[in-house]
Image (cartoon, rainbow, N blue to C red; front, side, top):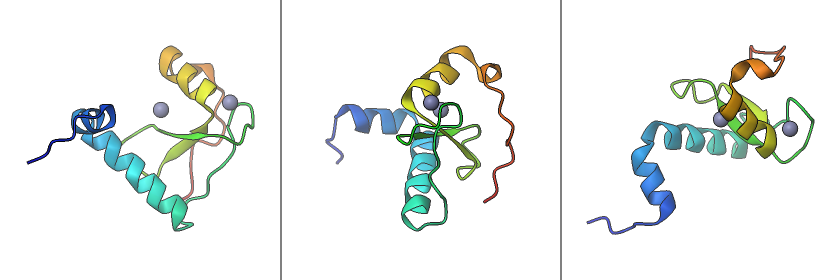
Length: 88
Ligand SMILES: [Zn+2]
Ligand SMILES: [Zn+2]
């Protein structure tokens, strides 16, 4: 029986697709299959992987916490994303 009720465990249960996608990214970065990049907007090195589609877990955009949050709050169109085609 599963007895973990931490915040993270709850989030994981509520968002299995997101959790899987993040795991795939973490593994790919570790295995050097995916290169972590700087924030697409400001160039900061501390970045999160943003997923446009969770069914394509390796198609990510690297964004710092600030710009990641902004993208989620205000929508896609606020950034001029030039390189939408991410090579895998
Ligand atoms: Zn940024
Ligand atoms: Zn995101």
